Amino acid sequence: MSETPVITVDIVSDVVCPWCIIGYKKLEQAMQRFEGQAQFALTWHAFELNPGMPPEGQDINEHMAQKYGATPAQSKGNRDRLRNAGADLDFTFNYHENMRMVNTFDAHRLLHWAGEMSSGKPGEKDKQTALKLALFKAHFTDGKNVSDHDTLVAIAGEAGLDTARAQEILASDEYASQVRAVEAGWEDRFISGVPAFIFDKKFMVPGAQDSDVFARIIEHKVLPKILSAESTAQ
Image (cartoon, rainbow, N blue to C red; front, side, top):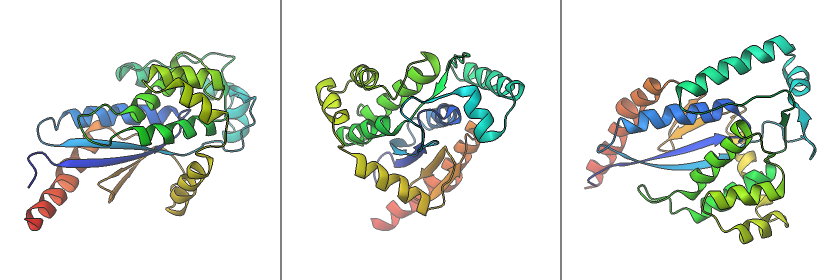
C-alpha cells in the first residue's frame, strides 16, 4: 500500500461561474484537513454556462434578466451575497455596473492545453489549476475580459505557461474539438450545472458544498474505498 493515498478530483466548471470558485475554495479548506493522510490530484474540465454567447459578450444585468428573469434588485442581492461569501474564503468579487458576461470557449482551450502541461502528480506544480485560478481572479476581481486573446495570453503567462505557445493556440482552432468532446461527455453524464466535483472517478458531489460536506465524503466514502482497494491489491 502506498504511504499516502492519492485522491483524484475532477472538477467540472466554467471560469465565469461564481459558485465554481466558491466551491473550489471550500474544497481547498477540506483538502487541508487531510494533510499527511492523503494527497489530491486535480483536473479541471470544460463546461460553458453560455455556449452561445457572442464574442462581444452581454451586459451582466441584461444577461441575468434574460436568462434567469432576475430583477436588478434581485441581481444586486445575489452579488452582495457572493461578495460576502467570497470575503469569507479570501476571494474578492468586484462586481460593477458595466460588467459583462463573455464567451469562455477560448479560455477552456487554454485550460485543456494547461492540463496537458501539468504532471497530474500531487506535490508538483499544477499549471492547470494555476491558470484556472488566474482566470477566476481576472474575471471576478480584476474585471478583465477573459475572452480577449491578448488578455488570455497575459493570464497564461502569469500562470507560468509559455505565452508564445498560448498565442499560437488562440490564433488557431487547436484544442477546439477536444473541448467540445469534453463538454459533450459531461452532458452525456447528465451534468447540466456547475460546479460538479467527482472524487476518485466514482463519487460525484454537485454544487458549492460546505467544506464539512467535502471532508465527510473524503473521510467516510473516498478514503476507505481507496485504502480497501490498495489493501486488496497487495
